[in-house]
Image 1 (cartoon, rainbow, N blue to C red):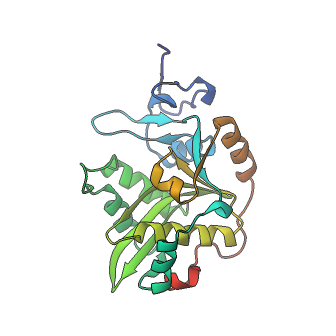
Image 2 (cartoon, one colour):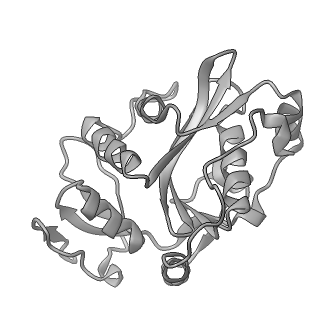
Length: 236
């Protein structure tokens, strides 16, 4: 079995080609969740994913799940939800509430990997202008949303939640609407899921993903990026 590098403070990540085949994409262990470490990781296509009391685990799976904005698929039922125009949309107004909602236990299982250390780390990235949230609101109540990290013209999706039917899907449609208007090239979905595949996500190789990142890192979004229509009906 290949050995996994244990990261020391300020130590760089090993080449992504050294990631394990099983578990798929495990690259390194340890280190920290400082902004510098996290931003360096994302720029190389690496992300943290672990559960306490584990140390930080760093991943770069192959293949990689991505959503190209032009590939977004909106089903008939989701179009109906959008046309009903029941949801209000906001950006970056409730980041802390969104990430904490993503950390809550799901109906079908326990809580997620998003612990207090992760919340603190991504809140710092939010304060620095890198991490962003999409909020879906119904009658003044936060009912869905997502958050992730934007670097160049790539958005690295982290997690989403839903307390109403289709609320998280509406958040994703809103995100794609926003990113397309600003010239973003791709959304990183990390690991394949049937749910995201129904919305248009697909797998590409790690090498192809890293080539996309090499292009997007140096591209600046256009216009006032983090602005959405006030209501979800305007997304159609």
